[in-house]
Length: 261
Length: 261
DNA sequence: ATAACTGTTCATATCGTATGAACAGACGTA
DNA sequence: TACGTCTGTTCATACGATATGAACAGTTAT
Image (cartoon, rainbow over all chains, first blue to last red; front, side, top):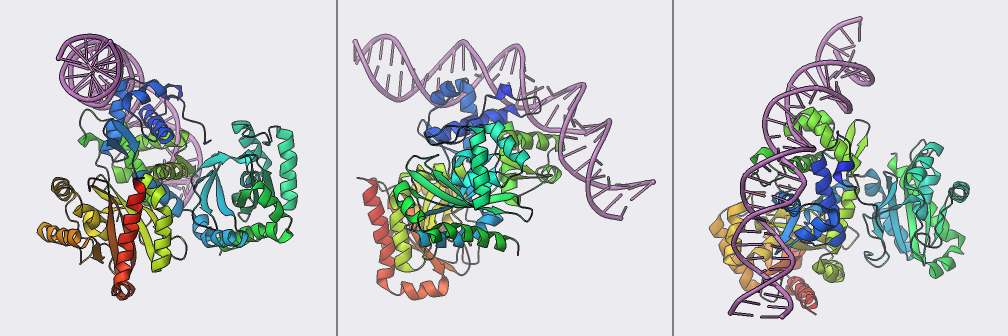
């Protein structure tokens, strides 16, 4: 599951360009459906066919949508935007090599997550054998409350920010292991702070287990997290070795120190 | 250099959502500048400050722009769009492993390019030692006329399509080696067709040299190209070995055959 | 302290969006 | 084949919303 979708344009205040809202509602619908026709989108978004057609043909003219017969799909130009956004992140540049090494050393998938608007975004994922395409993809947004990386980030936020995230986004129950009680989450975050590492047990994907350590700025505010993920059973074995978990922490520390030089 | 930018909204016909055009002009300006303030964008795009502010705050509300103090930047959500678009491409799924192997076998950067709207887009780039971040990035659009991959694609287009690309986009001179004469390009494309491979010599980046082979559908229409790129001097040495160049071709053939099974 | 910036909000006029109808063409069915 | 129902696209219209420039307060430099 990805983040929730954009409400219809009329729910926004007067200081909002509602045409733009509608455009992005269409873009996100196309993201979900990968390819769609005019009337499908009109039905789904409750818009007139003419309206959808106008938006799609506009997006086609600016090259962000491609028409294939009667179907429309998002164009590869979005890849260019995504790649540019990512490469502008200091943390991505600095962390790239370390994450690669971490994947190699652990034999599992290693990632970087960055918080944005109360969500966590995986900006980098490397597996020991090539790029991973299953389960979680680079660029995916996930709730901070239901992943090891997210918990590592939340744990280092100020109480104020943390509570804001919790009240804004709640604690969506994604698997039977997801923490859904705010008080329980606060306890868990205290443990994360003390141990300087977060662990999840299938709270986002059942059967997946992750270890994470946070990267902070000089005041201790969270900038992101380093994560190692794998199948629960294999991860359980590996976690028995204390060196394994400390690898995640030392990677995070190394990235953090290089961020400030 | 990336693809050219969107003209101002008023130049579009009546069947176009001009608000959307303006929004994407702002998005592309933010792509170029990575972070910008309201009045910078207003100056650059020749819009009223109030207009830019309205668009930016709209984009922020739908989570596609992040505000950091007085600066605005594109959000990581564009990464999610880009990753989704890419993973919907059959050719990406099929080619991934082969390109990885090709990078390893050649010791150079191996890529897949896909044509879209008369441009070539690098949808995948793998280097023997980790992900390459220099020069050309995944997601970047380049002119078909000035790259080996682009020439491999152009060579397999119908004469009609090919001429349409040439007349629409021209032959932009990117380095002193770029082919700028249409007739010379047509000759070159004939050679490409005969040899079943395209070579460039710094026509896009000086000092870079690439070999490419096309991937086509069952009717022979170009779907993309497989490319190996590296520094000119090193590539010259390697190209002396006939097996080296044929590796590119056999990779393309293998991808193509697996596309139709 | 001044001055020149800034980002944001506001009211206004005009432009342009969203709508639903109308149309022709594609598609499937009988 | 002929029908009916779907489609995408275009069009005119009414209303709504965009773009504007001015006004304002806040910030940064001078």
